[in-house]
Amino acid sequence: MQNYFFVVSQRIVRVLELAGGVMDEMASQSGPRKEIANNHCSEFMQLIKDIQFALREEIKSACEYRPFEKCDYVPRISNEICYKKLEYVIAQLDEMKQTMEGYRNAA
Image 1: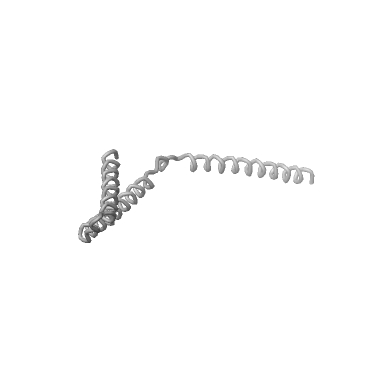
Image 2 (image 1 turned 90 degrees about the vertical axis):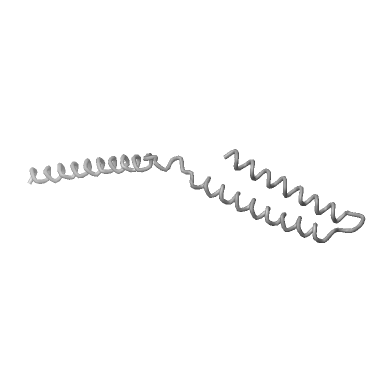
């Protein structure tokens, strides 16, 4: 991970150096040398693309990290809730059965 950040930071430093080099060329009293400015701009654009790609890949790999993936809390709690609901329904059915038996015995 540290190596990754080191490589990206080196690329960013190089991008800034290239941008400064192009600015120096443009400010030159003898006028900018087209070939040098083109080379700097090409390398600048390629490094920007490389940095974007590297950052996208790092973000993707960070999104793949799921520390709670194997956590069973939600299913376990869901099962406990279902169990309590079933207990309640069974209790209600038992009360209904007793009520029905009470009517039978009274008749």
